[in-house]
Length: 238
Length: 364
Image 1: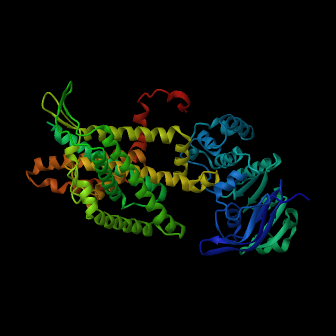
Image 2 (image 1 turned 120 degrees about the vertical axis):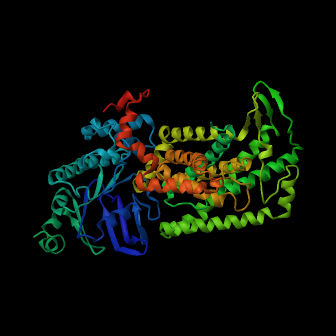
Image 3 (image 1 turned 135 degrees about the horizontal axis):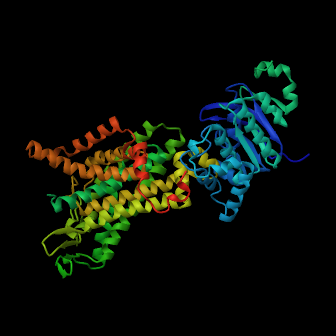
């Protein structure tokens, strides 16, 4: 079996003095979609943010491609090939689409950056029409699209995506998850936190259930989807 | 009729305010704290500049030459060679930056790491202000400092003024123009232009704008936001330093007074914050415009009120004018001058002004 891309080993983490994750151990398989689900306030987003160094880790160890990144600041993780897409405020509202994309590839050589921007437009043709528009004036779905495009510019090895469908109409939400699947088809590893449990697990390979800051299930997404007991108790699905 | 002398001294004062307001805004935009120690950084810079200029003058055996030379533009007095003034500018800038970085790295950053809120940070900046004041008191009463400053520049360390050593021009018509007027006005314009180029034409500038707008997003895109903040502190310290250098030569401009451990920082802090707030707090160019506006208003509105009321002591109330402008701004245009420019009506007006190159890509 292929080495997992990220390994989380007995991590305790949270925000300053508020611990939200307890003894979490987890492996993120390369090239797959891992979907993290759980009740509100269980620590799903905290887990995702912890993978990117956006929380405080009290103990435990996180490795990325075998390298210890537990104490590495987020901007260094980005350089290693990790991308994070926030749930809200995930584009620079005051900058145009073009400026957003250029900024995402700020450390790439100019010719490579232009090539990457062209590639991104092939995946999201609608962004090409919005090139000089300020990101803040775009619709919610378009903004999510731009957020993913920003992540793609650097050709990361793994995408961490935090609740991309929150607050979107069902049709748009489906479209966003479809885009996530498309990203995975292009070879990107995905870690997705999703509040729409059913839709999320349906596109996922691996399912992780977080309850009260601990891992309550870790296995194939289809199996988690089939576990009626867990679904009823924690996910509001009957 | 505008009195030219009043206009030049007011311009110097307004430029000092523009520099200080800019520094205050830069720090507010990045570190989200009102730096009450900011004007004191200028005093540190001014003392450093005076000390280094005195040492330089002594070691290079320079004597002030106060004899005016006749030139095509009039009588020009250049008391010292250019290198003397350059020493002052460099020392002021370096010490302004050092004093700012000490504040950031030794005080504010450790507090931020402990999760301090903006109130604690603000109190900490006040504490740093007092610390700097005490250090300046110790410095300017030291015997070695006194002797260094007195020879050959004849400076009094507790009331520092180098106005006599400023370059000056007396035109054929008898008009007196202080060198510092040209320097400070040119500096304000050059700084605004340089900042525009930095922010809108360089990658570093785009990173700065991104780090200001959305620090977490900038960070996950691989931008070292902390380094960007440090650059903002360096810029802020440098502009405070330059303001201190100007103050050294302009002790009668606006409500500036000879430099001591307390003056003019204690008085000017009000006006500098007024400039930042009137500019819109979150706008770099707004802060420069706000500082200039407050600087001119303090003189000219006071003059106007004096003419209307006939009360000769009206100039004592110059800071009431700036506070009144702040109150009016907060009441009627809370986002300041920058906010006014961004309003739909202003945009419509601005869009009618033809700007070369704007047609490209901006036609949507």
